[in-house]
Length: 338
Image 1 (cartoon, rainbow, N blue to C red):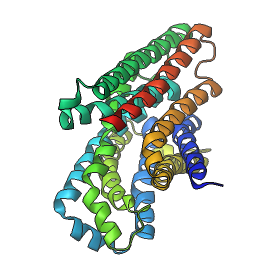
Image 2 (image 1 turned 180 degrees about the vertical axis):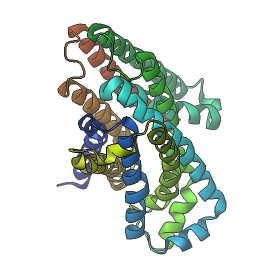
Image 3 (image 1 turned 60 degrees about the vertical axis):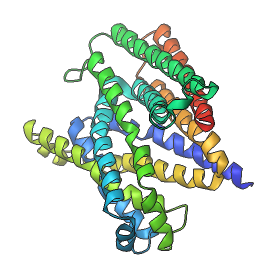
């Protein structure tokens, strides 16, 4: 099988894994949200990243000494900021479901990922065809996000009041916006972490695994806000005993599965995009994000998030997802031209 075909199949798998990682949260109903999210944080940000880094990066200490404190500090700062958005991502999924939250957050992330570099790095190209294409893609994102938000609101209206203790649709959409805005800091972390990647390769790490040296400080810093916030909620709500509640031993595996799907998708995408070369930047990233959006929307339907809401909200949601997928490809194309 051609290498490009293998790479694209890896991206499809990575997107499906990422779009599915939050679905197991629906099975941990005897735990509070903070119990589930804390365990996901521990597995996904404090256990898996160090294990993979030490397996794939020779002499990590020498790598960081060569890269310098400035690069490490920049990556860590991006990780901490992203970690705050991770809290909102978890709250958004809990409030409005997988389909609406992922669609809005990834749409905003794609828009900001193209708009910010255009404004701050290539402001002279805003009035060029490439710049206009970015703005057109941004407009499509805003349209798609609005459609998904309206669909979520109509679903809530059709189903009546949400479950007791869950945030309102208004709060849920706010969480989506905050989560989507902050998620772009991951990409910035890798940009600022370029000296770390180079140092890793100088120390003998393969090019395909060198990003793991930057993932480590980024994800460790990213896990701190969730660790603090979830621990605070567990103490405030007296939910520590829920970890030992009868019939919840399987939840430890479920939260580990969530972390594996999320972290594994990130690593798999990085490996696939590296192997694809130029094709990875042109087609790989929009394909990855599109598969995540589509997978999350499909899981929303499969798991009954839209059951009983009627056809109109479902059609609206499908329309919003379609607009966002188109917007992602438009933004990716424009980004290659800037």
